[in-house]
Image (cartoon, rainbow, N blue to C red; front, side, top):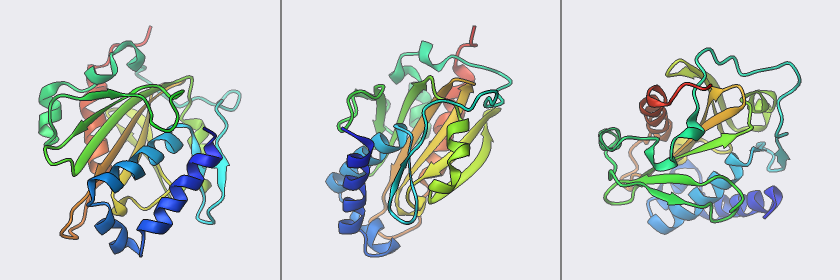
Length: 220
């Protein structure tokens, strides 16, 4: 399935579910709708697709510009770890999630690397991790203007970007961390609160990376 089709589906869901920020948060409290939106977001963002506020999708180039690296000083090899072992059970429990993760192919784009999803007991909160080999953080930096929500940071001593096509206050957040110059560890979190209280999916996605990265083996 093409990126353009994925993002049309994503925008369609957002239009149907969203009646302003408060309306979206309320809609996301429904587990089925939240899962559908999460699937589309995961596929589109992991595929490297940025969506501008004007609604047109802009494919992010898959390669890094010549001579520009991610600035990784302590390269790690996330691809050497089985995807559901990227988080240890005790670390998952500190995130208030069920310790057993589920390895999944992306429902909308099976060509993407498998991800592992952990859920809370009620399903209102999820965290997914996946490894994106052959991807540089620079592609997100170069296309930062195409994201509704974008910020650069350092997580666990590694450069990272927060890049989203919607406001994280609506219940989902994607973070991309450079484990080495040509590999990304991708963390995607969803969080819903039916009471309308504020949610912090980016904080959850960040905590998952902070737990995972220090245990990764050094890149050879």
